[in-house]
Length: 446
View (cartoon, one colour):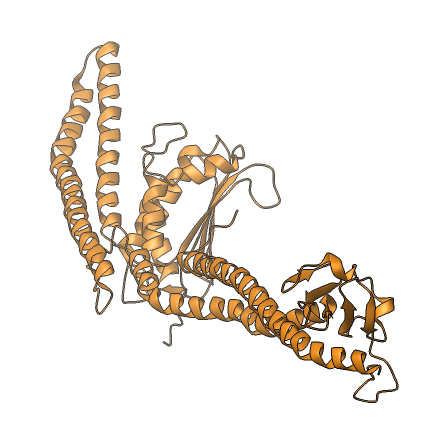
C-alpha cells in the first residue's frame, strides 16, 4: 500500500472533515426547509380556505354554482389542482371543484376543524362551520409540494457540491505552499552523508521547523565530531602500526635465515605470514580512512589509461598464477578522479580478483573509452542476495581477506559521483564475477 505524503494526508483529512460538516449542514437544511415549506404552504392553505368559505356559502344560499373564474377550457392536471368542497353539518357536499370526484379524499366530517391533515396524496385543511352551517375543506396536492422541494433542494445542492472539489484544490494548494519548507528540509537532509555534515540554514522557515533544524544541527555536530574521532583514531593507529610491523617483519625474515630445525622454520614462516597479513590490514585501514575522508574528489582531470598502467605495474605480481588479460584504449580516457583514489580502487579490485579466482582461471581488466573500468575473474556464480552484502564493511566470503576492499572501492566511487556494479555470473556465461565501475567522463578540451 502506497503511503500518503504529509500534504496529501492534510488535504484528505481536511476535505473529509469539511465534507462531514457539509453533509450535516445539508441534512439540517433539509429538515429546516421541509418544516418551513410546510408552514408557509399550510398558511396559504388556511388563508385560501377562510377566503373561499363566505364566497361559496353565499353562492349556495343564492342557488348559484361556483364557476372557474379564469375561464380555462382545459382543466388542470389532477396532481397540480387545488380541490375544495363545501359541505353542511350532515356531511353533504354542496359545492365542489370539478376534479374533486376524481381525487381520493376522505369523508369531510371525519377531519377536525382548524387543523391541517396530511394524507398520502393531499394536505387538507377544514374550516369551522359558519352561521349558515357551512364549512369548506380545501386540499392541496403533495406532488406539487414535493416538486417545489426538489427544485429548491437541487438549486441549493449544485453550488454546495461544487464546494468539495474547490475545497480539495484550495486545501491542497495551501498545504503545498505551507509545507514547502518541509520539502526543502528533506532535500537538505538527503544531501548530507558521512562526508558532508555541514549545518542546515533554517532561513525564514516556521518556528517549529527552526527548532527541528536546531536539534538536527546539534546532532550532526556531535556526529561529525564522533566520525572525525573515529577516522583520526583509525588513521593514527594505522600509521603507528606501520613501522613496528615493518620492523617485526624484517626481523622475522632475518630470523628465517638462521633457524636450524624444520620446526623452527615452520614457526618462523607462520609468524611471517601473520605479519604480512597485519601489514595488509594496516594498509587497508589507511585506505579506509582516506576513503571516508573523501579522497576521490578532484578538480583536475586525469588520464585513466596512464593511471591504469602505473597501478598495474605496482599491483600485479611479477609471476602471476593466473593469466591476466588487459585491454586499454589507444586514446586517453579522462575523468576527474584523484590518482591515488583511482589506484586504490583498481588495486583493490585486482587483488580481490586474484585472491578469489580459482586456480588457472583467467583475470580480465578492461578500460573502455566511456571511463568504464571492469575487472572480471572466473569462479562459481554468486546469488543476488550475497552480491548486495559484498560492499558492506567487513563483509567477507572466504579466504584471508578483511572484507574492506569492495567497501573502500564503493566509498571512493560514490564520492566522485560514479557507479559501481557487482555482476555474477558474467554476461553470457553461467560462472564468473565482475565489478564494473563507471566514472564520469570528461572532454579533454573542456
